[in-house]
Length: 347
Image (cartoon, rainbow, N blue to C red):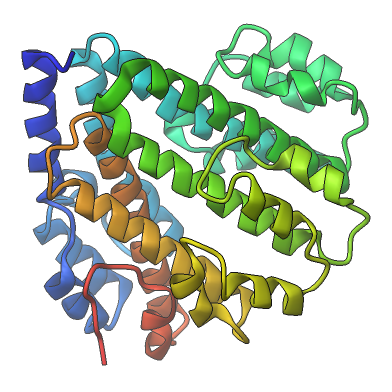
C-alpha cells in the first residue's frame, strides 16, 4: 500500500517538478546570445546552487554537468527518506544508469579511451565500485567476474556470457540483451505491486515499444534474422506479440513505414515519421514520452511520479545541452530542431 510517508515524498516530487523549465523559459533561453547569458538565466530559474559559483567561460558539457547535480541531489534526497517498496523501485531506476555506464566504458576502452575520460562521461546515478576493472577485463566473462558479480545488474548479463568476444557488433547485442532483461525484471516487480503501479507500467511499456522500434531500424542491412530480433525484443509492450513479429519481419525502411501506418497504438503518432530522417523519429518518440510523463502529474499516479520526474529532468538536461551547443556553434536557428517541451512553439 502507498503509505503516508510515500505520500509525503510524492508531494515533494510534485514540488520539485514545478521547478522544471516551462514554455516561457525556453522562449527566453532562445534569446540568449552567449553561454554566459544562458548560465545566468538558469541561475535565476532553479539552478542557483549548481551554477552561481562557476566563474568565467563555460562549455556546454560543463554547464550540463553542473546542472545534472540538481537531479542527483533531488534523487538522493528522495532515496534517503524512502522505504520499501519505493526504495526498490528507485534502485531499479538507477540500474539503467549502471548499464549505460558499463556499456560506455566497454565501448570506450575498446577504442583506446582513458578511464579518466570515460568516467567523466558516466552518469553519477550509475556509479559503483570496481568500475575501473572494466579496463583490464579481456572478455565478457572476466567483466562479469571482476566487475559485475557483486552488482544488482549482474544477472542481466547472464544471457550474454556465451558471447565472450567484445567488438562493435557484440557491444550492440550486449546492450539490447541486457536492457531486455532489465525491463522484464522491472515489469515483474511492478506487477507484484498491483494497481498502484499501473501508470508506471505505461512508462515501461512505452520504453519496451521504443526499443523494439529502434532495434528494428538498426537491423536493416545487417545479418540479424527474424529470430535474432525477436530474442532481443522485450517480452511485453503494446506491440507484443503481433506487432513485434511484424517489426522483426521488416527488411527495409519502406516496409517499416507501411507497417507503421496500420500499427496500433503508434500509427497516428509515427505516421509523421514517414519519409523523414531517423533523428525525426527519435524526437517524435521523445515527445510522446514527455507527454506521457507530464500527464502522469495530472492524476493520482503515485509510484509513477518518481520515474516520470526523473525522465522529465533528463529531457530538460538534453534540452539545455542542445541549446548550449547551438549557441556555442552560432546556430541558434536550429534550437527548435531537437527541443522537447510541452506546448513549446518557438516560431
